[in-house]
Figure 1: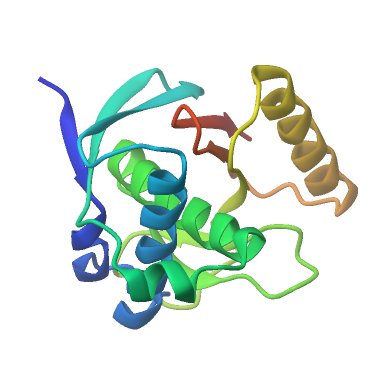
Figure 2: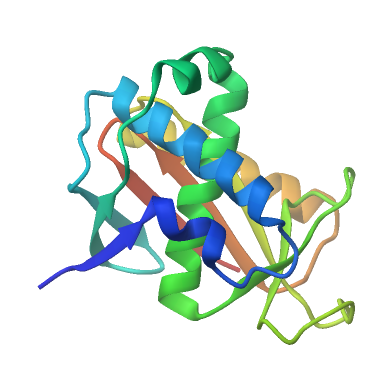
Length: 176
C-alpha cells in the first residue's frame, strides 16, 4: 500500500524554518497547480532520480477564492513546487526545513531535523523548481541547469535538487 501525503496537514508539520501560515500558502498553491492539471485528490505522485517511490497525494478541493488568489501562474507554480518538494523530501529523508535561504545563495532552503536552529555550517540544502506541464526532456534540462547553477556558486554543501512537474505529477530528485 502506498503512503499518503496530505497537503492539508503540511501546516502542522514541524518545519522550524516555515510558519504555519507560510505552509498553508504553499499547500494552497500546490492544490491550484494540481487541479489546473485536471488532477483530483488521491492522484499518484511518482518520485524518480535519487529515489524510486510512489505516493498518493490528498488535499481539500480549491475554493473560488483560492483560484483568484493564485492567478499568477508563475508564482503559484513556484510556491506549489516548494510544498510538494518539501513534503516529499521530508517523507523520504526525515529532513525538515530549518530556514529559508537568502537570495544569492543559489538554493531555496536549509534542511535539518526539528531541533536544528541556526548551525548551517554542515547544513543540507534543497533547491526546488516547478514546471506546470513538461516533458521528460524539459525536466532533465531544468535539472542540469539547476545543478550547473549550484556548482557556479561553488556551493559544495550536500543536499537535493527537486524538480516538481505537476502534469504527471512527478518529483525528480538529484542528491548532491
